[in-house]
Image (cartoon, rainbow, N blue to C red; front, top):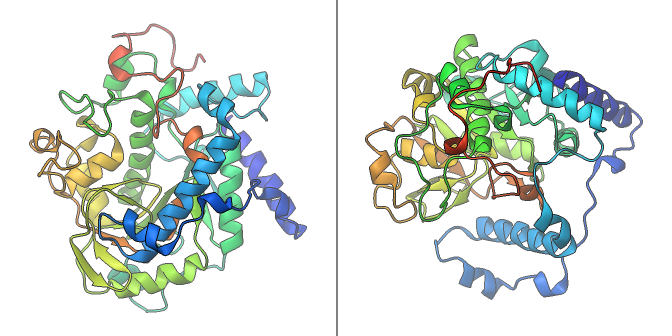
Length: 395
């Protein structure tokens, strides 16, 4: 049923696209207020990490837009709890919840019922012109995956608009909704185990949430799919993305800049928490401790390494996990717990990052996130009962 709702939304969007009127797909936006615009001097003052000016300006733009969005929607933002889009009727919400429960127990398989292909670009899809683009450059080609929560069709609507505008074909993947878990025995039955002693860190001082578990599971599904189908590289995005102008062309150009450098994880969108370690080319850096998994390219050897290490048995919030699995954070500068995690999380990833980012979360999307902030009704894994007796397909 979850696929049905996503499929219906995709069909509606495709119909609107065929009419050449995609303006109605674009979420309402307003220009930034003059008081929120920043001068070059102010941007330089913000740049305490020493990042390139383009990255700082882009983050400031989205920061200011989020501030303005919050001010315009304060009552809703403060009262937000477990979210179903208002476009879903109570009956639809029940059906989606039931389908989401069933989806959890198909993990980590990516089945046809949990994925939907949208064709907005040329076929075959290529981002780089070189003949060795797939193997030498990590060009994802047709392997673009967008993780989307079925109970949040407004986010999928935004993602489809972005893909259509930039002419990018993709596979929409129904997310694993961690809020569907009812007991610890269900996680244990899937082989999912939180990182021993996990209780957050000083910059994310909360215990592991069911939303964070679902996020990790959703990404893992695609890594598993890559290994199962021998996919050389994949672009993986979460459905709250904004694609920057000329995304496809710039993605190919930036990948070409990274030619010859050894990487298996390429951040296409990121939130740096410390200075970059090295500038390798005009648009490629070796990042420090990095947050966000809104958009990244993973190569097959990275996917294999993650699966072979059974990372689902030392589960932590994915962006923190990626950074520690890349050997970042051992100075405890951002994550004071990273040295304690290091014995459990092996160094598996060799990250690079595109700068400025080509993917950013759209303004206001954090208020529809199960992982970016605590909300009314946030569920913590430690608070789940030890076991449940209800059948898995009962909503």
